[in-house]
Amino acid sequence: MQCGGFLPEAGELQKMLASARLPQTLVDIPERIILCRTSLQRIYSPSGSFKQFPVAGRVLDRRAFDRHLAHRAAVSGARILPATRARLIEGQLHLSGRFRGLVRPQVIIGADGPHSMVSRAMGNPVQETGICLEYEMVDVDIDPHAAEMYFSARFAPGGYAWIIPLGRDCANVGVGVRASYLSGQRLPQILDRFIAEHPVAREKLAGGQAIAVMRGAVPAGGSPPAICKESYLLAGDAAGQVMATSGGGIPLAVLGGRIAGETAAGYLQRGEPLKDYPSRIGREFGIQLSRSVQIRRMVDVAMKSDTLMNSLFAALSPTQMKSVMRAQIPEIFLSRAWGGEESYQQR
Ligand SMILES: Cc1cc2nc3c(=O)[nH]c(=O)nc-3n(C[C@H](O)[C@H](O)[C@H](O)COP(=O)(O)OP(=O)(O)OC[C@H]3O[C@@H](n4cnc5c(N)ncnc54)[C@H](O)[C@@H]3O)c2cc1C
View 1 (spheres, rainbow, N blue to C red):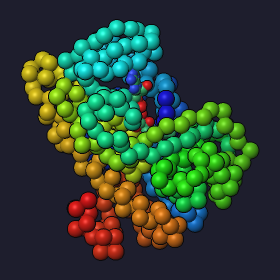
View 2: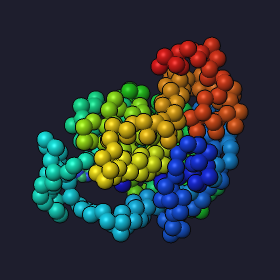
View 3: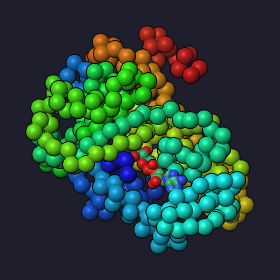
View 4: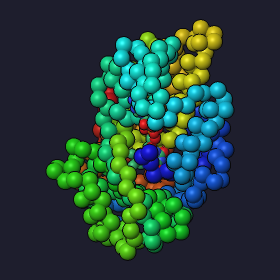
């Protein structure tokens, strides 16, 4: 389990992913799984100033959410094999752990995360990822209504730090960076520095304690070259289905999983071609996924310098920032100063 648990409300998701058919699992989430609700997204520049805009969000108990999905799958006929590892060798799955044996599937959907074995078997190169470290903290003095992002070359090189409320005095506090920006620093050093020294965050987190630690990787480069090959499909992190502007992967993983499942069922039940999978993904959220990567690449230029990042913050209104997070490209990014529409199209 590696997650901050932040998931926009269904209405926000539908505005962000206008062409997507949201599965019920993203709409009706049992209340016992929702730890708290937020109404704002607040974004801090390196200078410590902030801009905020309304976003209705849910913070999930991700462990409980995944069990809820497994429950729904089980009652719908799926066979769940917990505590079991699969190795893919020449089209066969070799199972070890609680369940052992050999499976020769007609279709394999690799939903096996950012270091996907199925993706490697399809010949994809290693994905570009961000690396993340997160503490669950208690006894903190945070704003329970706001999910916060902090940009700064010192406190989150090539990425951002976050505070996601888990209730009145608890929060997930983390940092996600690109390995190439680390210049010899270690991730715990960066997160501890953010908590102890960030001029704004330290006021909120001082005196708090970490009661759990989580680390993991987030795809940052969009889809690998192949998400469908022969009888293999990829979904979720394995398919790079993460909004590169925020690192949010729950919505696209659930959507990608639904589309992969429907494609596999169509193939087995009606002989429909598996090779339609990429275009089905493309129709529902392809534009948002590829634009989020394009925006991230453009912002990368600014991330190298706090001065540039502060200027970008100053230039964007809160509404434009919300658009950026939703992978809608504001006019400013298309101007000559940022390389213009031409270079945006070439990338
Ligand atoms: C620190 C951190 C914080 C994050 N916070 C958020 C957030 O707040 N909101 C958000 O939307 N997204 C967040 N994300 C991203 C989000 O967690 C992922 O995008 C999402 O979990 C992707 O789901 P998935 O099912 O594709 O992959 P995963 O959740 O990685 O699941 C893959 C599963 O496959 C299993 N697996 C892999 N290989 C094998 C094998 N060989 N045999 C058997 N099982 C295997 C793994 O054990 C795992 O259970 C965060 C990521 C990180 C690292």
